[in-house]
Length: 465
Ligand SMILES: Cc1cc2nc3c(=O)[nH]c(=O)nc-3n(C[C@H](O)[C@H](O)[C@H](O)COP(=O)(O)OP(=O)(O)OC[C@H]3O[C@@H](n4cnc5c(N)ncnc54)[C@H](O)[C@@H]3O)c2cc1C
Image 1: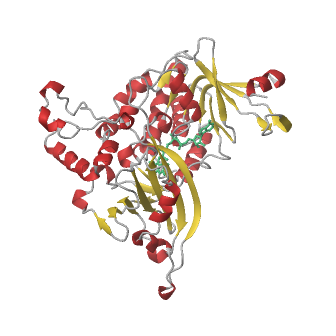
Image 2: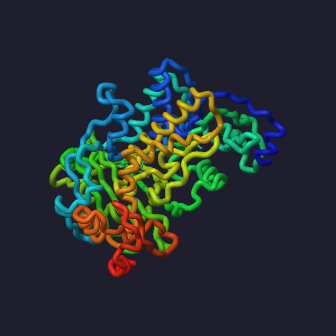
Image 3: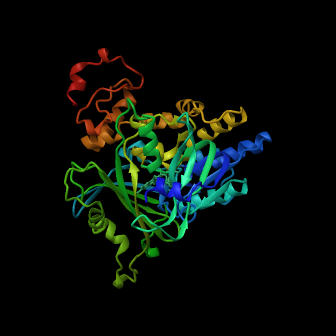
């Protein structure tokens, strides 16, 4: 039986109504929920908010070990330190390395690209942060339903989104109902905020249905594989951030690796590979395992009995999709009855490999728009105030600055860095790459400040394409 047949024979589904339904309890979804309830408390109005999360608890599906820019969190919860947010390890050192098979060269501090500088950021367990955010949300009166996956978008007759339905459980692999069968339920909202993370399956459907990506560059994705290790205290350098490029990736494949020293003798290490790799035999997982054998990485993991160093212990691992396009591929983020936020929309800053701050910020912006709309008695229309607020936000400025990072990566980080330095001296210098990796072509982009295309010296930009 397919799901329509199951619904016909076992329905109708039970439903619950809320002002705002949020799909996904990541940093973005929880920031939306917290902001909505904060606004309600500030104004003495009420708003009902539910978050559904497919993991067994908030944070269960979040890969730990990330560098967090605390800017958005500070805007959301200014006293996060006093409230015990798990941001305990500030970044102490940034090492950018180029690897060959046996050697490594560290980029001198002066040449570290500004987007990879992490002064003032924290190395955290993102999963612990999400658990803490869920506690803050619940304390404000947000209902969180873990263990429920939103399986279907529900529409009104006018094609606006009216909520989501959770999946049925207790269906055999042949599609028949079993003794454990339970019909999914409907969560109906005046507005539904989709915060599923990168390549969310409902987000994908919404982008296609409402043609939200029309006129935008195609979205592209990478796979990020991460492992959490406990290492010998003698090899632990709390706050050290290491990023590497080069071996074992060839120069045609977009990717790189990282190793972050958290608190408690833990390191998070991982590898990101763009999913447009040309070699069909390339296995991102195997490449990561090879990378771990590089002398500069294995040193942290291997024991050395002669020096009394214990071998490191792997305590967790996982893999997820990661956005790898950027601002030029950002779809329209609102549609009748709902919004896309965080990595579900593609707000990750690829050049900084950071998206948690962007998820929190866009969650807050969507919450502001939804709160005002609900208080004005509106429902199921477009939250235009959200993208308008994004256009005026610091996040837009940040993403605009790094919008061409990936294409520069393809042409060589050295060239990108040189261009950025030149741009600091000559801001009108045109950007010679765009963000259309699948189109196999480059074109001129708007620059900062904007220079009319016909005034750009032809020879200079043509030389790059
Ligand atoms: C390898 C790797 C390294 C990274 N390193 C960093 C870093 O150092 N710093 C940084 O800032 N960012 C980093 N990121 C990016 C960061 O993880 C994301 O930007 C951030 O988590 C996005 O938040 P979000 O709330 O949009 O989505 P997510 O954090 O992905 O949360 C989405 C949540 O929704 C749930 N969900 C999804 N679909 C459904 C559904 N249909 N129904 C119910 N629940 C659903 C998921 O279980 C999940 O809990 C990294 C990402 C990867 C993959």
